[in-house]
Length: 546
Length: 85
Image (cartoon, rainbow over all chains, first blue to last red; front, side, top):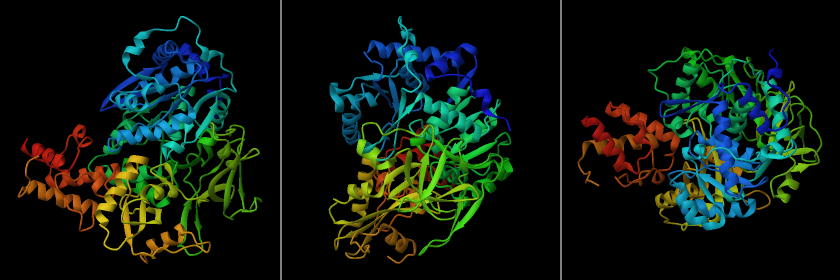
């Protein structure tokens, strides 16, 4: 095994590390940025120079060490330098998603106003025309900077960059949870936590010279941010960065990039394996033999989807032993467990009461230094094979959410983090089975059923409090989709209600609903405590019994 | 917006959309119909729809234009234009 010692040069902070890499090899490639078929190589020297220009611009705008800078950009090479520039300025950057064309700008910004009132950012870095709606909604409360090449011409700050005086235990950046904007939880990551995670995770994936990461993942998601961007930034392993929106429309561009650049590592949520199998045209072929691992992460890995991907692209060089699984969470920087690279993940059958048996893929063993424990309702550790809540402890675990003390108290128990995920151990490997709460994982992002229900509940024609949002595996797309079970008033216009519900959820969450199932009053069944039961009604729906 | 009544391209397109998303029978698909009006028409399934449209008409739609379509009428106009070239 090639240990990642190669990548463990002594460094304390990200600015220091990036300066090192830029000085050691200014011409070395950091990233090949791909957009609309055009490629631009970005060297460490150029990245560092551009980031310093951003830092100078931030300083001129009055940004001080510890200030929060929100980076909300479409696919652009400014993503990297504007973000790193904030760190060089000593500020704390946070990537956030931009509005989709389907979202109403006024509602998008109204939700952000609530979020920004809590996290108090000092600057929003964005693009035109997003800056126009942002300024209209936010007024002078939050200055807006438009990312553009003219910033690169701003030159460097005459004074030393405050980022170099940051300490290893200082907060480097914030990662935010997905889902409802106003309720986003910020996870502060220290330089030390990022470094510690990098050491452990690069060992788990046996990162080595000659590797090349290919990614279409957005950077506002921990998988794109940590596994792809930070790994490349801090190890010098090059990244090929594709546009997430372009990839959705043309999924084959991932294979184009792997073939052209001899890619070796790729992280994908489960739905992406299905999308590639469904939407890549059958008449094209690639040489994908360079790949070491396709790592399934951010959504429960479904072995059937994995197998469909493998068999569909076997003629192009996809083999079972290239498939791997990671269990990750922003609270632990990213990775918690990882299957061995070069070995097909193990599977287990899970038999549950009132539900068909399920085949689960292993998520592998905990990273070096990380401890994972399965606990029962009383908080006691459970034996192998018994399902309970997954608790995580480790040297790079977060110390609490940004400005959310109640949330922190709820989730952090001493040095243990209560993940809210359910799972069990078998032969030392973790299997994730579901959630303690009503969280739905849709396209790699997390939403709570009660939030979706609250959004649609007030629609005219629906009976208040008689709506349930459930996640369903859609066989056609291979993705998990949200279905709403709703008791309707007699004669209510169901099609119009469905369209209104879809528009409302899109505006508030950027999420499409798959179907709204109209039900007669009294159809949904309750738990013994008198609440509507999501699990029982979901099962009835799946069985066709509603 | 042109009147699409009797337009062969438009009717064929509506058939492809209906086969792709299988909306309930009361969902009328017209030129002003948007993806939000048809449940299940999301960014992933939009790609499948485009594949199905390309297959049904034997054409290839330009990527730069398929992402920014506002409604079914726009998609029909794009298909007509590509078929005419």
